[in-house]
Image (tube, rainbow, N blue to C red; front, top):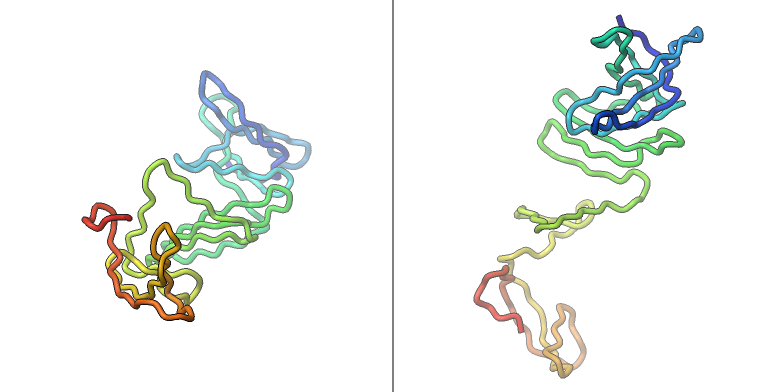
Length: 189
């Protein structure tokens, strides 16, 4: 049997070296139960007390309970059939602040909904393998390895040539070049 209730508190504790999450739920009529937070492997979501609701079911063992799902009363679902959306929320308002959306058409959308930065951190290389990378919605394509670029060389500042892609009064020598990647036989200076 399952029942819905309001989340009062969420507590993380360690038992036998394993960190577990327990949820205290007000089932109404003065009945407050403590239930184990159950979720998919790889899902580290934390319900918000005072905002979210929980569905509580019986669990193996005498008197044990577990949550079988949560209710977010603030953020309406947006996904279409076959899609997956994960979003983070402000802990005081419950409003979504960012999202990672896997869409049914094959596209992936990563959004900061409140202007916060998006950071990618890696101890190894970050690889963007695409024939067309753009900055900004409808923006111009950025130059990639293999592209031909053009510019003008304007004398020297003592430590190497001054290269620009914009005209500078006084002339200069025009050039065309191909962007090469690491490991090529072109020197770096």
